[in-house]
Image 1 (cartoon, rainbow, N blue to C red):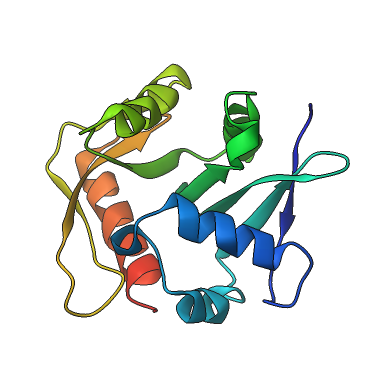
Image 2: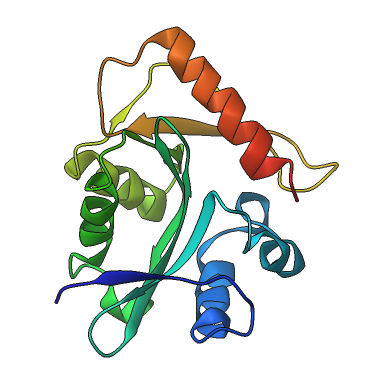
Length: 176
């Protein structure tokens, strides 16, 4: 099954309601936006809120940000009945074909589900940075979340990495 991405830019666009349900079901509240905030963000030029589609059906969703030097994957989820079929790997390949290094956050594994997510990214060639990393909150009053930061490229210059982290933190998390 070959997948493609279709960018969603309005909350009345085809697939939005199904993607929103997958988004809400797949990520805990502290790791995602509120629906009203998400709707507001759909037209931010750097943000790509996408349906993952096969020829005839919606099979997942991905939210990524396109910056000048890298892509940042904010969320990736596959429909429950379609998991394990290589869809997530195909999405990562499509994004890697953009030609930019990719950054993404992964929760620190604490159970089998989170260990599977870490293993998925490791199998796809992503490697963790050896740094203490915290995801900023999506809502005022929430705490920083300890996470792991991964990339599909090794050898990042520490200064450039810190610049990229500051950039995506300021644009991804604080616009809501």
